[in-house]
Length: 115
Length: 113
Image (cartoon, rainbow over all chains, first blue to last red; front, side, top):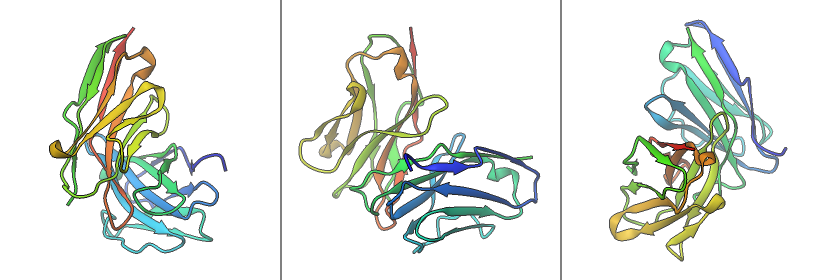
């Protein structure tokens, strides 16, 4: 596609519900990243995929967070039993290859509000 | 662990004023450095990046940044800002093994017409 797309653009949920956030990277990009942007916290790295594999999940803030990527393309970030502190904008980025020399292209984000 | 500091939280300028936004990183070895911009209601876009070579890097929309290794700095500059430069600016450094970027907390720039 022309750019990284994410859905939904906005999600309002009640505390304790599960949510799924979707990212569709740029076609041909093998690396995919999830970040979280909170007020006052800046951009926080969550997890990275090279192909379908996530080598290190230690950036996820709690075991309520999980992510998967299938077919080397679309990725889903799932938050179980949402809490108010999960409210943030969740950003997805992709790059052709993993590594600092390749530009990461960001999607528009999903704004999650947990009531 | 690598970290990035942006000194200014909010900068307010009049049109045609010169801009310099500070960015310092903590790691002293080889670094890959980036400036991203987020215009109101839009997604993060790359302004410029430095990997090696000429420490003065030119980006889009008249922006440039200078890598000064001895000062661990990568400040963003523009000689004359426009109202359309109103946005939030993020400095970032490549974090390493996971390919992730480490971002500063951002500087909000407001340009008065």
